[in-house]
Image 1 (cartoon, helix red, strand yellow):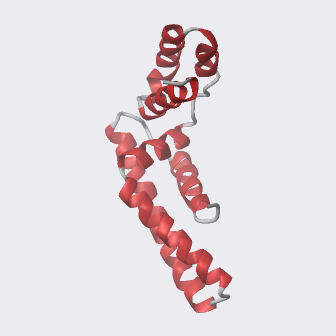
Image 2 (cartoon, helix red, strand yellow):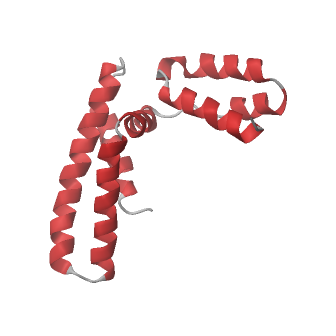
Length: 135
């Protein structure tokens, strides 16, 4: 395995694991790896709770996330066609889907023992919402 492959594997493990264990697991993996890989692992930043919630959701519920990505493409197509009626309808659908996906993501996080505050929910919704506008 290459340095980049090892780093990606370690990053996936860190970002999907319990947030409370991030620093200790990162330190252990860096110690095991040694050398340049250790430095790269140590450079991985602990995510915010909102980013962690979205990471877990993306990993655990890829089908639901794919639904959002499909809607995002439809929105871009409607915008390119300057289709105001479709944009309005798709915009409403986007808001409902964003809220639903954020609620599902929060449920996953809560099931893993994380507390999801209203501020975190807002940040999760903003992160998911941003995916609609940035391919």
